[in-house]
Picture 1: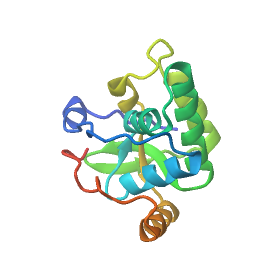
Picture 2: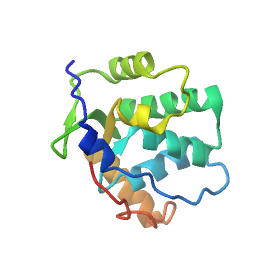
Picture 3: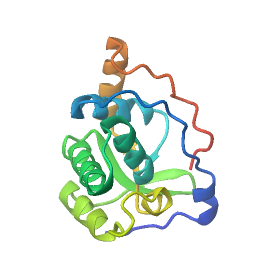
Length: 156
């Protein structure tokens, strides 16, 4: 598997959203929210960590475990793919979901449970067509209103 680094310029163009965090969500609600928020953009692993912390209300080692479990489920259910952003384009990794999660687990600095910048440099996520369909379906049901969609202030 080839892992392409994101340049410092590309990393600096991404900013963290200021998101109002409601009470803790169930794992299914969290997946729906992540898919809806990622519909028109790419998401760094750091942003996924932010969503897990904010919406699942977990911290410390539980946060690390929660992010990895959420990522594993998104990949295994073919709702998202993992890769790199190169010249503002998403380039998926050529590996299985298990291989991707194993690599991310190895590369995630264990002494920095939730360091947004460190996690943002590991990988990026993009909705698959199945994930986009799921996001649209949930939005139609009104379960995950897209109040933050399109408000990212910097696309990789």
